[in-house]
Length: 472
Image (cartoon, rainbow, N blue to C red; front, top):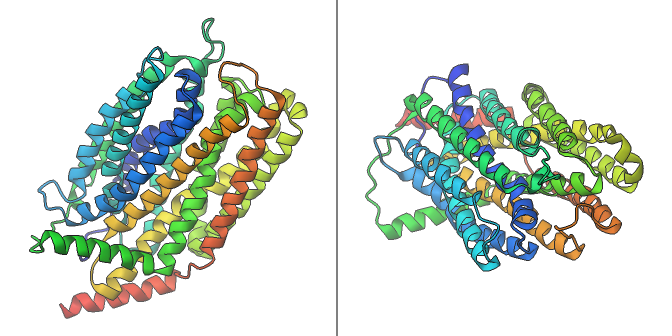
């Protein structure tokens, strides 16, 4: 698909587009932050079964994410090749999200396993149907190098608001202790009420995105290719994506970065609950501070990306995040001193919050730049496949974190029936979180070393593209 030149978006259109990431973020973050805890501590399922569920879902994502990108690149519809899927995904996710968080704990383990497995697979499938075309649409809103960063920063800000609500806000509102459930996170009804709220927001923000970006709907010419040719073109485009060293650098860097972030989100709830003995209010304060800093840092990262190049800004964000995780490791070793003074964890929250702020948005802007490479060389643009494969990398990282957590909980003898875990279990939770996150960030730093595109390189690519369009 070739580029269609459209008037640059205004700030209202960019913000309205970005709201879609809030609904998506709430639903997906519920899976990341709460599903393991919900399934093990509330539903009473073994951690290994949750690990198996996410292993199966990753295998499915390996097929569905790039395929969804290809489909949205080539779909012909009066609703638009991206917008039709945004609409379908919004409605379908809202239904499966309600089912997932309303499972009766009294069911048998086998029954709960089947319901959770099917619900997770359907929810993740419909999230893919929504998010892959949604991300590709973001790359089509602007051709400008720095405006692309602004689009992704605003989109990321809404995603971080969603994470802040899911990680911190929900702790205040839904997980307040009751006589029946002194630990509010163990109340099954809390998850049901959260599902109703997140479903409502998903519907509203999905509709807002769809309606506010209708002028960016572009037509796709009727394809005369056979099914066999379509499959070959799909594989050919995937090979071209992976042959670009700059795209590979982002794909791997983003995977490892989000693995570290996913560990913080998934294991963080267990760590702050059992390692540092925080109540729901204190957990909400720590998570809230972390994500507030991430949200407020977005304008800073846009400016840093323009001043020192996007890839260098990403590397800076990784270094700051590693410092924050190192502080968490030290806090774990001295947990007895930290427990009475949980405010020490604010240093961790500020460093990780600011560092990861740039890691969420800048790589998405860099992907749009790599699509320029494809158009300059082939005359085609396949944002759908580029972002579909990136979404797959993101989901791998999320699922890997949950898979690891499921097995780690079994290995360290985590007992969901105990309000206070054994000292060794509590200590190992914090060590696994901090060291695992540091290793993931170091691997991401290594991956980004091979990225070479900068503002001058992108300007050169776009000059080539303009010449090709002029010749046609």
